[in-house]
Amino acid sequence: MSGAVSALAVYDTLAPGQANHWVLRSIGGEWLSAVVRGWVFEVTWGPAEGHDGFVLDADGPAVTVDVVMSAKLDAHLHEIDAFQGPGYERRLVPVVGDSGDLIDAWIYLALTEG
Image (cartoon, rainbow, N blue to C red; front, side):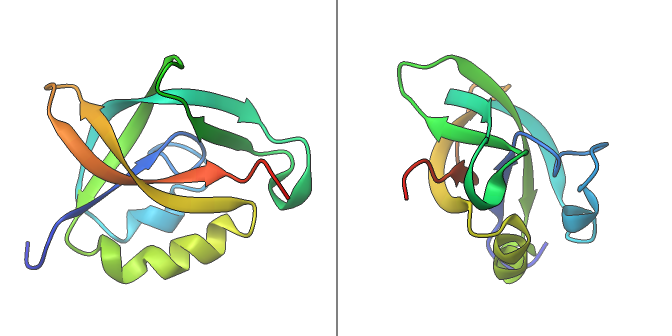
């Protein structure tokens, strides 16, 4: 792969085998499993209503996420942002891979305040 490899952690419909995986499929890269601390919940308000959301919480449970690592990811982040829409904010967070390695990965956090 050419260029820097970036990572994106997903916890819902963007994951392999899920309804919206098509958004990431063409980017390619390596998929692995990881965990991040926080809470997954159904969003019941605003532009993300009806979808799952995630909020970080260092004292929260370990949430399993799928992580794609790809040199092409950075070139597609604005498209993924647009798909996610105004109910989410992309943030770089540390996730722990199955091997125990710490990975800096983008993740979409639900906006819980107006």
